[in-house]
Image 1 (cartoon, rainbow, N blue to C red):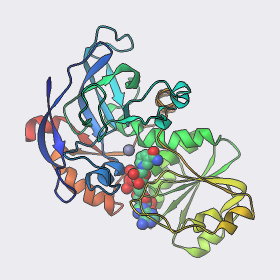
Image 2 (image 1 turned 45 degrees about the horizontal axis):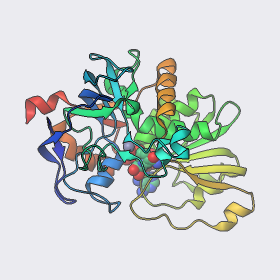
Image 3 (image 1 turned 135 degrees about the vertical axis):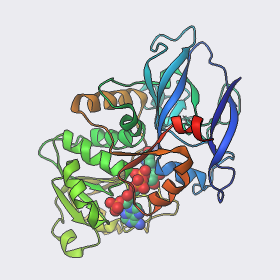
Amino acid sequence: MLTSLGYAAHAAQTPLAPYRFERREPGPHDVQIEILFCGVCHSDLHTVRDEWHNTVYPVVPGHEIIGRVTKVGAQVNKFKAGQIAGVGCMVDSCQACASCAQGLEQYCEVGFTGTYNGEEKETGGMTYGGYSNNIVVDEKFVLHISDRLDPAAAAPLLCAGITTYSPLRHWKVGKGQKVGIVGLGGLGHMGVKIAHAMGAHVVLFTTSPDKKDDALRLGADEVVISKDEAQMAQQQNSFDFILNTVAAPHDLDAFLVLLKREGTMTLVGAPATPHPSPQVFNLIFKRRHLAGSLIGGIQETQEMLDFCAEHGITSDIELINIQDVNTAYERMLKSDVKYRFVIDMASLKTGT
Ligand code: NAP
Ligand code: ZN
């Protein structure tokens, strides 16, 4: 077995703390990675605090992983030792169902294996994520990272990037369209950058007036303070597509009425408690759509990484030491993230 050092939560109410554990030795199809950077996603916080009621403790979170390949199995042909590689939210899927056959492993009909808090097929144990010094992953679920991308700032692309890119592509966002992004956090700021690069007219909705200048700098054409009813009223019936990244329950009607006839609002935020039910009339009178979307498949994740390398897109990050992760969670809950925390894993060696 391979010895790993990471940070784990042992219960919903206790802070993350150093944790030593074991991973499988790399098999013939596996890539072993020394983790350099790992982004901090709001999903990590939901899981650590068992807000989705499915956490198995101890849990080592982290699914925005960038590292250096240190070892590859005999059958691996996509990666070589020394390369920079990425791992996102999934490390396995059934590889046999209709969704997997279409490269939509995130919708695997048997259920994909999460990078953490998932059941590992090889060992029957749990998977442990990227708040740690190493990871072993089947090469099918490892991504190539262009050397044009800064490795620390590229880490959040593995979840925040693909979770926003996939719905923007699926609903064919592009030139001539008016697109709303709700919430300027980790996902939202990637949504603004990517929708802008796709050529759309981007409107950012925020509850934080002090984020306005940043939103414009990141690529928004307009910024609307979503608590300001007069500003919201001016936007009625005008959007082709709205991507809603908010991590807390809120009034969906306030945004549904902003869609044009046949426009779509897609939810990617996954709050612990449900949103109040929207008014059906806001959907039926204009044949509007309310939808959801989950991360993205492996092929599409590689496409997104290549798109970001081509357009010079990475995340705006605040690099932190792993010892500061509990404080980072508290700041994330106050919407005080500019715009993604990324853990510098070198701090794990020196500080624990
Ligand atoms: P984040 O960095 O905390 O950003 C969330 C943003 O939502 C905040 O910055 C804030 O933006 C806004 N917000 C927070 N509370 C709000 C409230 N009460 N009312 C209105 N707006 C509020 O979180 P994240 O990492 O981007 O994740 C966002 C959500 O997506 C989480 O629930 C996460 O679990 C989920 N997620 C889903 C997928 C998927 O596949 N569907 C993948 C990854 C994450 P402003 O300050 O601009 O208002
Ligand atoms: Zn995530």
